[in-house]
Image 1 (cartoon, one colour):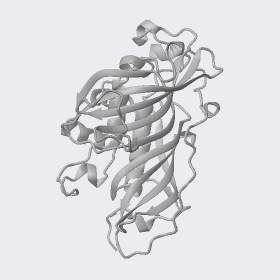
Image 2 (cartoon, one colour):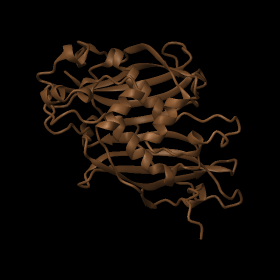
Image 3 (cartoon, rainbow, N blue to C red):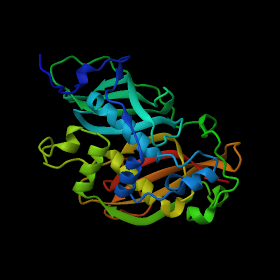
Image 4 (cartoon, rainbow, N blue to C red):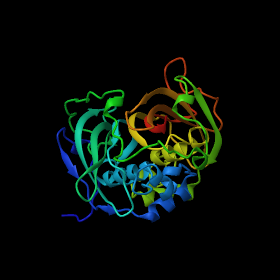
Length: 344
């Protein structure tokens, strides 16, 4: 028997399979430092223990997307090592803040499969949960990924497409224990805008742009242990280009959104998301947001704002993301729908 792991192919998945992903990881301040080196992340709650303590927390948690990247990265050898592309997300919730010293592990359940019409690949749906060292769930989300077949002649499985809610209900958002924005320091946060200053339907151009570099992307994929072949191996794709990890684009767009949404502090839910078009080294990422909803949470001073975050490349037309045919414009890289906590 061979000792190496070639990764799973489409025909290796069956609905109901539970996969315990290998190698738990203890995260520390190093992950925060590297995250802030890779992305221009500036949200105060993740940057300052004093700011976080003033908001009722024990200290500054690690950025929510650090937890996402670590939990996601654990799944790659079992879910997307032979992926063509990661396609989308739904029903994501951050349930516990992650602090330096926490140890994270991941577990996934296959909840859907659908072979593509070309017979060469299929789409696999998984629900992934990230656990900390005391088996508390810190993150729970669904994603779907297109995976190559090993044997093109293998029979197609029965199609199962999970029924996924389009939005995480505001009543299902989990507010971290102790969090309060009653004494929130807007000056230190960087902007004066609170929940009441945003209107549903409002669109915000985040102004800045960042050109993606090959080297930084490779640091990121190694840091998050995302070893999918499309990100690591330039010979894996016919065009000879390594595909930029979609999470890299998510983090870059989220960081860019600070300019205009500095007080959208903690991400608490991921309603949906699509990597609309591939991103390659040399592309310049810009971002804009649309306010989709806003609610009060019942926690002192804490509101929740629902945002559509759109990342584009090469200075695409402002606020445009789909054509008349309903398809994403070729300049659009990311369409992400999420809830974040903001002072009222």
